[in-house]
Every structure is written in C-alpha cells, then in structure tokens.
Image 1 (spheres, rainbow, N blue to C red):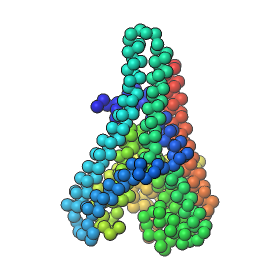
Image 2: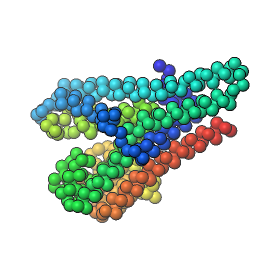
Image 3: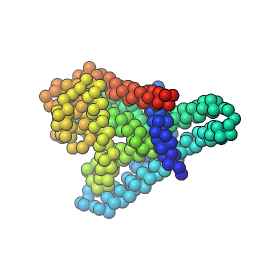
Length: 358
C-alpha cells in the first residue's frame, strides 16, 4: 500500500494540509447540523460493544491481588482490537484516496500526451480532491461528538431545574461517579467538569490525532479513550474487578491524551481572554489523572468557579459555586473553542490556495 494512503500529507504537504483542513470543517459542520449517526452505524458504538464483550471475559468477578496474567491478557486484547481499528480505518482512508486516483492519473496522461486540456484536467483534479476530502470528513465525523456532549450537559441543567433528583438521574448518564449524594451545586460542577474534559476527549484530541496521523490516528485515539472509559477503573465496577484488567487501557489513554489535554486547556484560556498560566498548572496537578485536570482547571479559572469531586480534588477552591449562568457560559466557551478550530482550518485552506496560485 502506498504511504499516501495512510496520510494525506504524504501526497503533498500543501494539498494534504488543505485536504485535512477541509475534512475537519466537514466533520464539525455535520456534527453541528445533524449530530450523531444511528447506533448501528456508529464505529465508536462498535468499539464499545467489542470492549464490553472482551472485558466480561477478562476482568475477574471478585477482587484479586497482583494479577499479571489478567494484566497481560487485557493488554494483548487491547492491542489486537487497536490493530483491527487501525486496519479498518486505514482501509477506509485508502479507499477514499483510491477513488480520486483515476482523475489524477487521467490528468497526468493528458498532460504527457500534449492534448492541451490542462485546464480541464486541473478542474477535474480539484473536484476529485474536494470530494475525497469531503468523504474523509464524513468518515471523521463519528469520531467527534461535540453536539451530543453539549446537548447532554444542557439536559443535566434542565433536569436540575426540575428537581435535584432529576438532575442527579440525568447526570448519571454522563459521568461514572456515584451521584446519589451529590448536592445541586455538585451536580452542576460535575456537568461542567464533564463538558471541559470531554471537549478534549471528543473534539480536540481526535482532531489532533487526525492531523498528525490521518483517519487511523483519530480512530485509534477514540478507541483508546473508549477503552479507558470502560476498562480503566482502579477497583470494582459493573460486577467486575478492573484494577489489573484496566491498567493498560488507562495508561494508553494517558499517553495519547497528554498533549491534546494541554492544548485544550490553552484553547479554553485563549477564548476566555486568558487565565494565569502558573495557576492553571498548579490547579491541573490536583486531579489524580495526569490529563483531565488541565481542561477542567482551565474551565474553572475561566468561569471563576470551583469544580470538585468530593473527597478527591477541588479546583480553584477560592472560586464561587457555579450557577445556571455559569453553566451557560461554559457552553459558550466550548462553542468558541470549536469556532477557533474552524477558523484555523479556514486559515489553512486560504494559505494553501494562495501558495498554489502564487
């Protein structure tokens, strides 16, 4: 398989950059307008079902001590599924490129033959590139989930307006923590935390890995993040003991999320008009996760509120308790981050066009 099947930048840095930027624009636009595809066609749902089936066979039903057999079995299972994800999405990306190849080949042949149809073939080539990039964006879309994330957080806020019990029940759809004893303030804090953390997991990080490693990179990240969400627990959950079965999945997600999480925090700080970077660094280190604290701390500082998990951490402890208006402001900040990504993609396309016509 030619290397350009694996990443658009391998074709040409300029054309590849425009292709990636256009694909990101398409994915964000489709997400905004139509949201998620049906579950039966959703690749992340497929990943989740495979992980659920394997996890039920790997993780023991009772607590155990140090269990290296379970650890390595889970690690090898993770790697096998990850390989399938990479192969599948590499094939999809390769197919999308191959569909554009006949146009490129015919244009090249016309130029060599001196037929004098360079202009027409150039239009054909450009059209094929746009169509391929659009299809690539459609394939990228299921790996992003901004509209779903924002709608779920709005649903928590709406339910909280009805009653504390309704707010807790709706929050349970969004987070894995025990919500039974949370106060109204803590329900709202948890929703805002989830919005900030999943801005990285569902938007910034997949786009980061898409730009870096194409569609297979974005898919691998979403697989790793889904595996961490389903396996990466330090104890009992769902009748299974994940201390050793989920350790590899948790560490893999930590590695792949390390840089995107910090980029997400910087983007939030940027659209909020700036936050003290030293304070951001200090607050981000207060969470057990090496990554989730960054976007959450940036959100807490941007809003001037405290965000906490009882008995675990408290971010921006000097801040006030978040209100309904703070939840709305958090949504606006997330939308501004998405708009910033759109503007970056548009700027990349404009830059490429000017370079190609210059």
